[in-house]
Length: 376
Image (cartoon, rainbow, N blue to C red; front, side):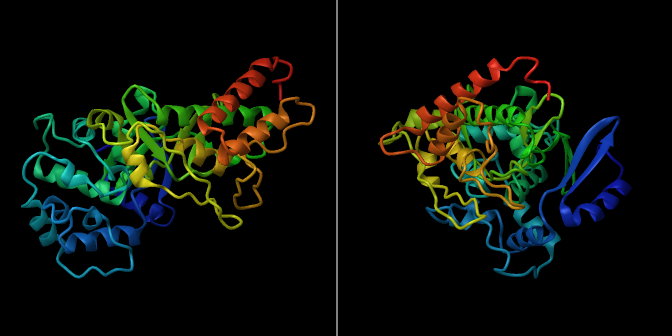
């Protein structure tokens, strides 16, 4: 453990409301997170009382609904949790498989054997004497429980910051508290920053969308919880990081290419969602995302929720991150139009082409900035 038990009780009492606590360890700035709100944890505990993971493991249905954690108001905790855990653990035999994890979280809507192997191999809470492709019963339970409550620590371990993935570095865990590297202040703090800074941040966000959509690892990571608060920015470098990775759908592109099901290589194009003022709604077509090797969802979600004039956040933050570009900037209208088209493409225009055009324009403007014009 990386901090004393007394500290855990103190931190737990603080983060029980906000779920996040900032601190230091050996001079390193850290973020401590409770995996979920108390009512969410109670909901999962109640689910375990009803049989929990065993419903998924028995393969008792051809669909994944039995593996999905029910809504918080479905039922209340009414069992001996120690006994419930013992009952479930007694059935956790053999290595972790696709049938164990499917449907436990957004990340595991369509897991592949390769993804499961990656997850188990990189699981930091695994004992050092366990075979690299297996876990002890308690470790397997811990892994499945974490996936059901909040898969963020698992995602941070599968796609680590040290390999240039856009997530904070995972430090460790103690109970239902995890520790991550401090990744900076919320993107929200930059909404009214100088336009040149906002333009650089927009370009970094598009590069993150590129990486999540197309990478050498062969996984598609579709990020559906886009907001000004779910990205962090390092003040000195302006490095952007996704600080809340709970709502990410992972698709194994290699498996789709191997299976070659009908239409697998036909691009999926996200359809613009119309929603009421102040609600950046996004509809996620899980079936399409899980069955296609290419989707423009990450660009759609980013442009609609953060970059375009359709973006609408609380506290009057409207117009998107690229708002209020100076009239003296000759590319100003082009950037605004491309950001809007990226969110809502005109007929017969491809979102992939639009985002590439937007990236090129932003890169061109940023490259043209002289040291004098950057001294803001």
